Image (tube, rainbow, N blue to C red; front, side):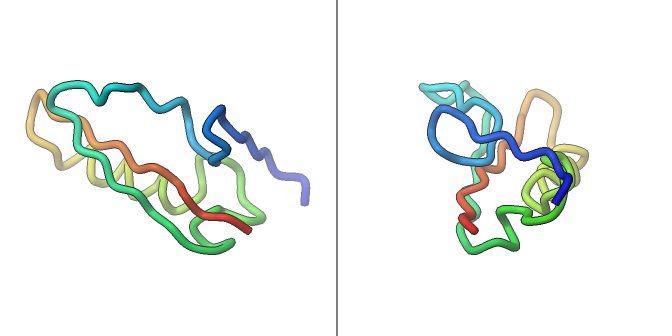
Length: 73
């Protein structure tokens, strides 16, 4: 579809997932079909990335929000 799709080492359309989870990090796993996967949109435009940016903008100082995209087309 002419979009950029990057699949990470964990088999997810997600940036690398640091293990163990860093202190002050909150993780949310999004599961589902092609909608959370972001079928037809670039990596940064899939709704889990948009949700991550919106939640991070509201996070307390010193806290990070990570959304793990577990969607599968």
